[in-house]
Length: 281
Ligand SMILES: N[C@@H](CCC(=O)N[C@@H](CSC=O)C(=O)NCC(=O)O)C(=O)O
Image (tube, rainbow, N blue to C red; front, side, top):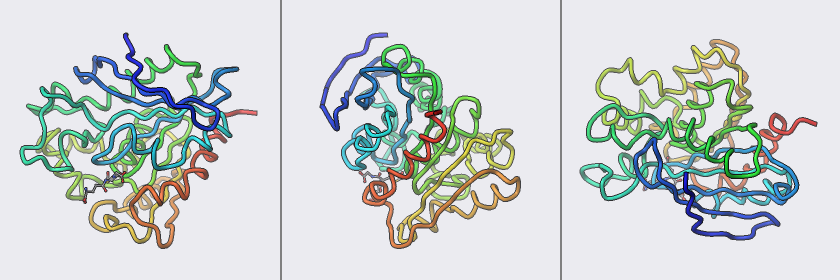
């Protein structure tokens, strides 16, 4: 596997790096960012995977959240993949909409043409990227997962489906019940088809009802988020957690919106939450 290093930036004593590589999952060139804290120069460090939301790339969290300061303090590497396959051969929304196609891969494996040959973001995030990271960087196999909005949906679904793989799960403003909101329904019809049985595999609230795992989960949701009622539906996740005593902490944060200002306000608490499970004393 050839990694093409495209940037190196020193931040809080560590290094923020971007790479391109040819992905076997998505059959196209993929870019990701990795932040290596200063501790990684001395010993291997655990990893937090961050999944971004609609319209994002690997850059949003690294430029807007302030995540590097806390990652450097705690000794955790941060890995941020892109939000979809990209390139001239990759199918996109027919009208160029922001909520489907390029920039909106929904962290699933598409089964419907013309998306089924490149849109394999689930395989990319769960298998290919961690294997690549563990083979090429000074990291342990200990990992946790977090994300925002569409990426919060990705973090929760991937964490719930792989309870042995992730030590902890967190999310900001996640799409909690995509089967029952416009963003999710558009994505699931387009990527998975009309059979709603297939959608259950990628719905956080539905997965939480049936998972055998008990991976600790922290969710923060802003009360003034424009997408809260129509798209995010955190009550569905709360109800699912209560139905089976899942260890979910979901906090409504008064006055906050959907933006990276909200994320930057609580990113330190999320990293400290993950550190409790990633870094054993
Ligand atoms: N353009 C859209 C909204 C796009 C948007 O808000 N994207 C969010 C994620 S939304 C859910 O996945 C985001 O993170 N944007 C990037 C950023 O840096 O803020 C619209 O106008 O409604």
